[in-house]
Amino acid sequence: MVEAELKARVSAPEVVRQDLDGRAVGRDEVYHDTYYDTPARALEAADQELRVRTVRGPDGSRTVLTFKGARVDDESGSKPEHETLVDDPQAVHALLRGLGYVPLIEFEKRCRNYAFDARGRRMLATLVRVPELAGTFLEVETIVAEADVAAALSDVRSVLNSLGIHEADLTSELYTDAVRAHR
Image (cartoon, rainbow, N blue to C red):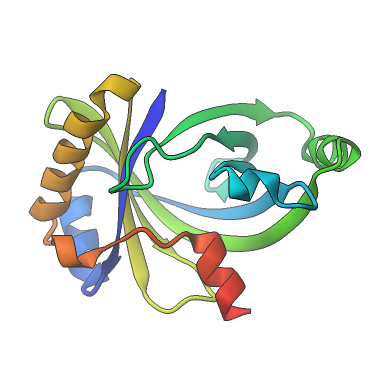
C-alpha cells in the first residue's frame, strides 16, 4: 500500500484547525521519531526511510517501526509504507543497531490528527509543529494501492483546497532535512 500524501505550510493554522474541528474530533499527540540508515546512508541514497516512532497521546503511548520505500511519483511524498506496532521499543532500537543501522536524526513533532471521510476515501489530516522549525505544517494523506495514487492525490488536493491551502503552499521538503539544516 502507498501513503498518498501532500504537505503544506500553513499561514493561518487557527483557521485550518477550526475547519478541521468541524469535520472530526482532533487528537493531540507528540511523536518522537528516530530515523536510521547505514553508515554510508544507503537508505537515503535510495530514497527510503527506516523509522522508529513513539507516539504519546491522551490514551497512553505506542511505538511503531516503519519502512518507507522510494517515492512512487515526482509531485508528492507518496511512498509505499510498511509498519508494525512494537511491544519493546528499546529492543527494536538495539536490534536495528545490531544489524548495522545507525540513528541519523531524532526529533519531536507535535501533532493534532483528524480522521474523516472525504471524496469517498478515509483521510488523515495532521497539523504539525516541529519545535525546531518555524511555522505550522498540514499533512493530508490516504492509504491506497499504487495504481490509485494519482486519483488519490487529486482527492487530497481537493481536501487541501477546501481548507484554504493552495498549490503555492505545498512543500516537498522533508522534516529530517529541515531539522538537519536547522541544527
